[in-house]
Length: 157
Image 1 (cartoon, helix red, strand yellow):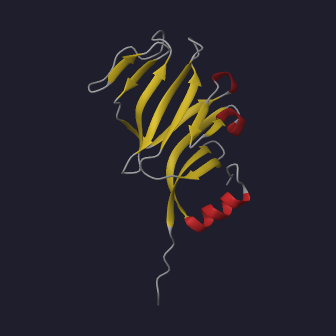
Image 2 (cartoon, helix red, strand yellow; image 1 turned 45 degrees about the vertical axis):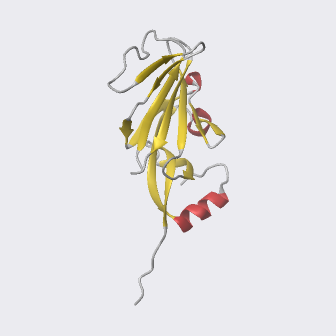
Image 3 (cartoon, helix red, strand yellow; image 1 turned 180 degrees about the horizontal axis):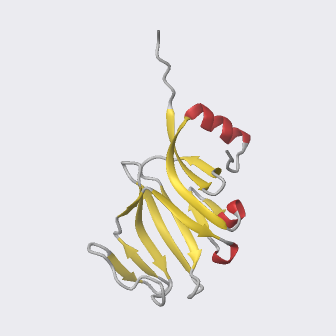
């Protein structure tokens, strides 16, 4: 009897933990990057975190951008990180903070945004005002392809 091999793909997916619904999903590979932005509640300016999918398929925060270093924004750096002052922003580079998943509360006032591969997603438009989880997952390629074809803007499970 021959064993049936089901090819798996790694996907970056956004889910709503409360309903266990996948609201967006795309295949990814090591080396790909994406950014998450939000409007800081005190400073009312955008903060951007930049992530890399590393060779072990983990989410690694490697850089952060923000406009000022006031209440609630980074004012110190960790060992190995670099603080770069530019005319229009402050950057923390050489960050190596690994996450297995990201959970964040999204809402329209915070302007939560994800940018990946020239796609700009408004997370509150996808999820409403609620908790979302961003994570990497393995899926059977056939199932992913069918779901993707049926829902080209993302998909729900």
